[in-house]
Length: 111
Image 1 (spheres, one colour):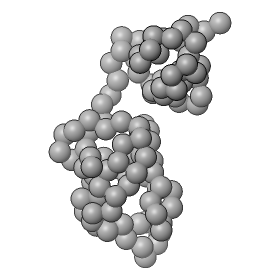
Image 2 (cartoon, rainbow, N blue to C red):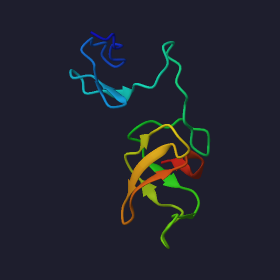
Image 3 (cartoon, rainbow, N blue to C red):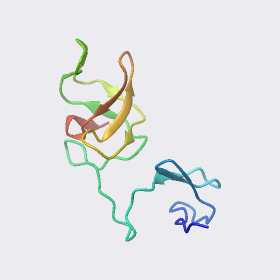
């Protein structure tokens, strides 16, 4: 049996993995499983330096052209329920009218 960490919210020992997330069945808390053994994780910050978390709402601060399309994500577009990922584009999200896409955290601010 693997030794998963207890829930940071309610200290339940019954956590389980679901892809890249750890989930507590007792309180429903979800957190990233990508933290290192000593508890330090790379913190993704928005353009103003505020730390971002899964499920946050952000606002685009600059018009962004979509590669391979004539569409543009306009400045001021609100993006709800983001998911943080590793890679060049560190935010996965769904934008209304456009669909699934990846964003760089340097082009958003926390709403």
